[in-house]
Amino acid sequence: MNSNVLKLLNEQIDKEGYSSYLYLSMASWAEGQGLPGIAAWLYAQSDEEREHMIKIIRFVNERGESAIVPGHKTPPASWKDVPTLFAEVLSHEQYVTASINNIADACLQNKDYTTFNWIQWFVSEQIEEESNAQGIMDYIRHMSPNGLLLLDKQIMKMRGEE
Ligand code: FEO
Image 1 (cartoon, protein in one colour):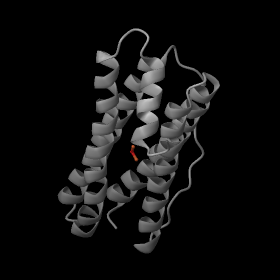
Image 2: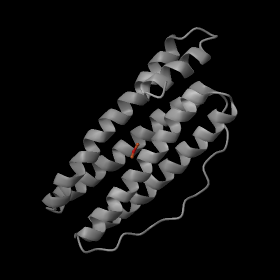
Image 3: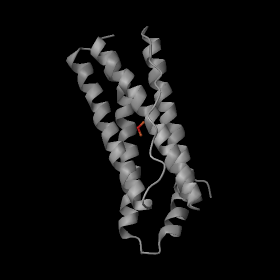
Image 4: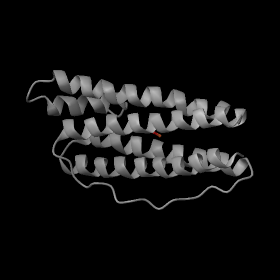
């Protein structure tokens, strides 16, 4: 595998792993705030990010390279309020999308069409992840000042856990 593509994939393993811990910390905070729907959404999101990390680890190893399993910096432990938290989710996903696009770009520049084909799954996944976070931000923008518990119920429904 091209060394630059490999380096970017190993960095992406770290980013997906950190995303998992970031959302886990957010889930724990939301649970402590008495918001079970938002907590459930974030716990599930954290699990998905861990799956993304493992998907990349296994791909790198399948291609005959050695994936690097990272340690992570400690994520924040608290947020000012729920809108601030979801604004961070959206901007974090936009950051991940830019990172995935950068890998796709490096694949083309280095003629690694196998990895380019494989990374398309992540390109599509990021459309969904950004759209979910954006949908919640839209809801927050239009909710009444006392709408937090309703938002919590709504998010619980999005995960089908009600
Ligand atoms: Fe795996 Fe939400 O990026």
